[in-house]
Amino acid sequence: MDPNEVHAVMGPNGSGKSTLAYALMGHPAYQITEGQILFEGEDLTAMEADERAQRGLFLAFQYPHAVPGVTVTSFLRSAINSIRKARAGGEDDPIAIPEFRTELLEQMDRLKVSRELASRYLNDGFSGGEKKRVEILQMAMLKPRIAILDETDSGLDIDALQIVARGVQKLVSPDMGAVVITHYQRILNYIKPDFVHVFIDGRIVEEGGPELAHKLEAEGYERYEVKV
Ligand SMILES: Nc1ncnc2c1ncn2[C@@H]1O[C@H](COP(=O)(O)OP(=O)(O)OP(=O)(O)O)[C@@H](O)[C@H]1O
Ligand SMILES: [Mg+2]
Image (cartoon, rainbow, N blue to C red; front, side, top):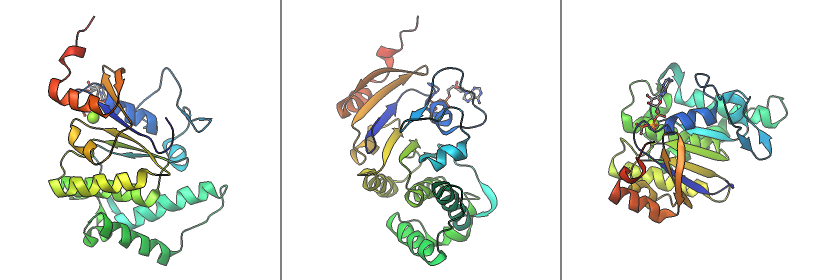
């Protein structure tokens, strides 16, 4: 996929969408037994998750984990600094605190994330929707080259869905590509996909444009599920 393209991945429960996202991100619990992950001319397959993140991959989790003891602010600052360090060839190049704070407040206001969350421990006691918003805040702060959004729309209220989806769409051009894993066409009204992929049993079985998402919503997955 090219940078600034949006690919939607739709498929039934248990078809392997989250597994694909974890495998792309380098989750240590998943072992890649076949195939390669190529990104901007580099083979990422053997890289650790943090090395992939430093190269610009980002995953917004379907079920974000709590990180007790680490505030949202300090988590974001160390994530940014780790990416900056890698880009500076391994030399420390920390972001200036005032610059960081200004941008954090700006992005929080833009994504309508309550300022009170910044000083709380990451995802600890956050509501479902707050976790999803903070995932997108992370994305906005880290400015990845490709963001994988795993069911970011589930659990968001109607206003939050629009805010979050518009936030993503704004980042998409010109520098960021996105893989949007979703069950519903609705989020794709705001994040316009260039391609829609149907994912069944760990494989892409059909590809099309945005119209395919409408068709899936109307017809379901039944016609794909003729198992051999
Ligand atoms: N760590 C694991 N070990 C063994 N099986 C797993 C593991 N993680 C997921 N699975 C199984 O792999 C299959 C695919 O799961 P996955 O979470 O990727 O589905 P999904 O397409 O994201 O579904 P949903 O739409 O419900 O989020 C499921 O049967 C799941 O139980
Ligand atoms: Mg999933």
